[in-house]
Image (cartoon, rainbow, N blue to C red; front, side, top):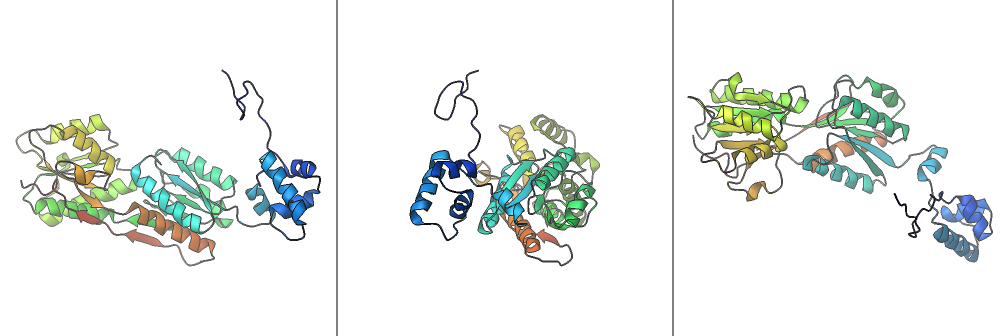
Length: 346
């Protein structure tokens, strides 16, 4: 394999980064003078400063801000964000909100995906801590978070979002999962549906379990009873959703409506139902891009991903600013967006 140097020369060896010593040598000044120029300190003659800046440009020198700040015993200017999957549009919205808040606070965000793996979550969180991040925001994949206790005792604030921690007490920001699926069931029941199915994620995931609980509550409040045969929990992919819908819609007493437990399950369901002669009424949890442009437009239980990210970031920065109040649990509201797919009468 041919390798290229920055100027395109094949086979060139990797060049080490320039140091302050290199800048001082090229500019013909002391390291202290370079440090003063780099840190915009007074006491350097303008002509000397210009010579130092020219050397910096020529060598491509960059300050190691983390090392400088650690020597001073101050912030590294970073926070860590552990998500389920940064490729999921919902978590992309969370990330963008955290980045915006952090930018205003002069910090950068380091992000990683756990892929719903507790071991990967732990590895990422501890890796971020080893890089001395100022704080952590975590969408937990597992139920054991005792590994964070030493970091929390050392002063690193941790905020959990979308799901609570399993075995530590910490700030948490959630959405109203129970209320959302309750409202979805009641909405479908108001159009005459009595056989309402629920397709949820893996039941050991907090959000999936809470949304199943809301589905149960909705059935009870609508007076339609709860039937295990109408519930299919994940994890789900396109094939499993298609098979589940096929089973739920056949027989003497088929499901006439479906509540889907997250945006990915909703998309799988829409693909499975594409081209079908008849379609069940459908309400999905989580909004998603182009949902309003489909035929029919998709009714959803919507919540603001950016609001989730902002609330979590605000809590984290409050702790970094010295807020020592007891851990908080914030639950953000959801809302039903009726667009057509959930307004089909039985």
